[in-house]
Image (tube, rainbow, N blue to C red):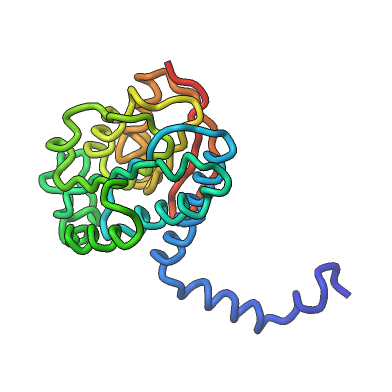
Length: 232
């Protein structure tokens, strides 16, 4: 008998599993992984007693933002500071606007990322009082012209392009500290380029601020989770 057991020889079981996985929508796979990544970020943050707020760049329909709020609420028994956490969400809700040549990508278009600000705001208000979150509408070059007003506990970067991600990193960099957790979506976009997209902006951020970090894990179809170790 095979060391792997008799079930390993049942090809129909392998075919069923393969077909199920092959036909699952990649967006579903990615979002489920993303939800676990956000939950892990809040759990690790609670253990390390990191102060600060939650920042998200690229809110879209508010699914990740809402999930972050749920994770914080469900983790208050681990760390009471979550009850005082403020949630900041930034998005144009109109797509990307005019892209630099470096940021042009067949998938990153306005039509794919337009959403209704009012519906997103209404969705979030069902979860948390209005004084505990800020949903800032506008393109990043208009809304991120000043520095963040509070320390960063967890930051989720889902802004896709280099230009918008670079503005987000610069906006936060004075408030990032050891223990801050970054969630970087679409980390391998632009054919794996190290100079484009969120990866390119992140590389410049760590060089500019002499940042050391450790990977916590990978999720979905191209997201990463990491924790800042040291920063200048």
